[in-house]
Image 1 (cartoon, one colour):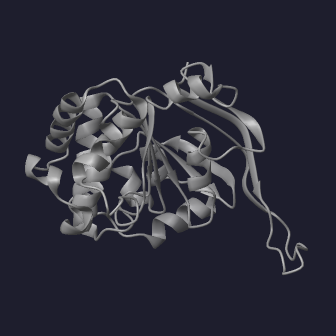
Image 2 (cartoon, one colour; image 1 turned 180 degrees about the vertical axis):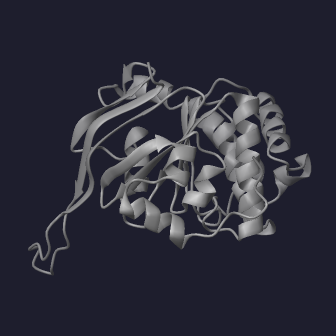
Length: 266
């Protein structure tokens, strides 16, 4: 049984309204009848241009966005039918790394407060236990303990993304949605983050949905690739097959349009 399984997911966002509250454009079908499965321990790379529905799909898997229809199961549990307490338990196992390392960290909070926030919300550890876990996670992402009492503005973009990754790891999740985690970084720093995510997957037995607009970036992490265009999956398959012999014209266009990720290692 796949760790994560989605079937026939649909999400439409309402169209714009004018000042009289009358719709001035049709609704946008962001995700249109999408089904996918992610096996435990694998990385599914979800690729497509901006506006193709990738982030919406990723958030629906975590139930951060409610779908209009369809189903999501995590380790056999119906995520969309889960009541509040059950969903809270599920979310210990399902975390997200956001795209923007500048906007996803509260500038008023110290690193310790940011990284410990998931444990404060979900409980289960004392203050000292949280700090001990925070130090462990900072070391895991290549950061020093001295970062704990500092603030986000004191760090570079790559360091901030490492802090976001440490926060996502605090509850020892099994599944992480990485939503374009390197798109706001320069190429060399992005390569470092990709390599870090690969190592963390081994160390923490993680399963990833790695969202990106770049097929060459995804190929370094993904065991399988799903290509999304205008809310629909147009091609899914093993990474090397998709990269070496794509069958859909849109996939070929994505490959032609994006550079290699320098510095990432297999």
